[in-house]
Structure formats: C-alpha cells, structure tokens
Length: 210
Ligand SMILES: O=P(O)(O)OC[C@H]1O[C@H](O)[C@H](O)[C@@H](O)[C@@H]1O
Ligand SMILES: [Fe+2]
Image 1 (cartoon, protein in one colour):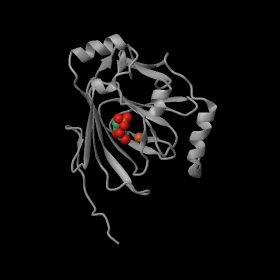
Image 2 (cartoon, rainbow, N blue to C red):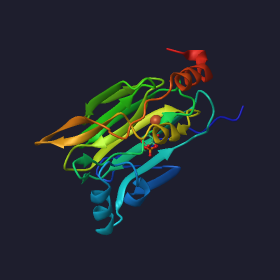
Image 3 (cartoon, protein in one colour):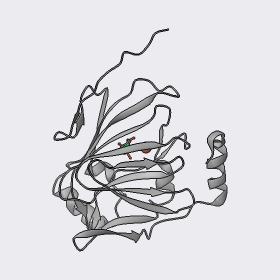
Image 4 (cartoon, rainbow, N blue to C red):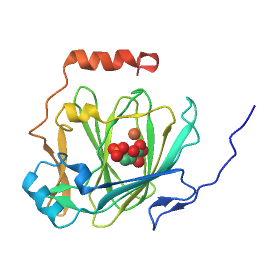
C-alpha cells in the first residue's frame, strides 16, 4: 500500500495563506461581475482598479472519498455600493458533503441558503468554527474593515457547483452595510428553485440524506 506522506502546513494569519499549499487561485473584481446588485457602483469600482478581492491557497492530497482538502481564504475588505465583498459561493457538487470554516482574522459572515431558499447568516471571527452542513449553499462575506482570513476543510470528493447560484439569480438575501454593522436585504433578482429541481438535488445525493 502506497501511503500519502504526512505533511504539516503552517497557516500564516498575517499573509492569509497556507504554507506548503499545492494550489492557489485568486479572484479579481472583474471575475465577480454580476454578483452585486449595484451595477453602476461595480463599474465605478472596476474602473478605479481591478484588484484581487480574494485568494485561496489549499492542499489537496487526492480527490478520493474519505480524504480531506484544506486551506485558507483571504478576502480584502470592501463594498460595492452598500454590499460587502463576498466569494462566488457554491453548493458542493456532491451536495451531501459538509465543510468546516475556522476564523483566523477579521470579521466575516457565512451566508448559507438551503435548496428551499432558507437563509442563515452566521457571524464568524477569530477562533470561531462554522459548520456548513450537507446541502447548504455557502459563501463568505467580509463585513469588517480589515482582511478576513479563514481556514477551511472539506471532503476531498466534494467538488463545487457554482451554477446553482447563477440559475437562481444569486442567493435569496444580500449582506449589506447598516450603520456601523451589517444587515440582510432581499435580493430582488432572486428566482426560487422549482420543487422538481430541489427533489432532483436530494435524489442525486440520497445516500446520506439528512
Ligand atoms: O469557491 P469560491 O466560492 O470561490 O470560494 C472560495 C473558497 O472558499 C472557501 O475557502 C472554500 O472552502 C473553498 O472551497 C472555496 O473555493
Ligand atoms: Fe465549499
């Protein structure tokens, strides 16, 4: 049996990166076109500079069921109009796979939506663990004025399905600035999923249905 070599990956909280990472990607503002409600504010922000909004460094030992992928997400603070910077968001391609996030620095909100369209918004800060159960669509939002850094871990065969959010016109609610804090506001572009699509999602992942 050829075993994978054990590895220790240091998390640099100040750099917002995983040491010994096997993969890295960044998303610039131009990659996030269509995510925000205020198109005019988006165009203005883009013309001021197409900066990196978030960076993901991870370690992927394999894609085998039972293995784990882990890494670090670093997100800049910022807003488009009154909407805070966010990740694209996804449901796992194998939708019954969960995820763990661990707050390292900054203040975030984990925005979750069930296939039926129920929303949960969980504030996450340093040393908080957020459990994303199977079947929840998830994205992270930086509600602070400093970088948001979070570690994450999920089953290696999870995969990511981004189209589920696109098809619905986004998530049902948006995380917006409200005084010094944040609030949820309905997404006017949202189209609820048809119940046949919801049933198909659960049926395709029926083995460990919750
Ligand atoms: O995949 P995105 O929506 O771009 O989010 C960026 C990343 O956020 C977290 O770190 C997740 O664990 C990753 O799986 C995800 O890729
Ligand atoms: Fe995920």
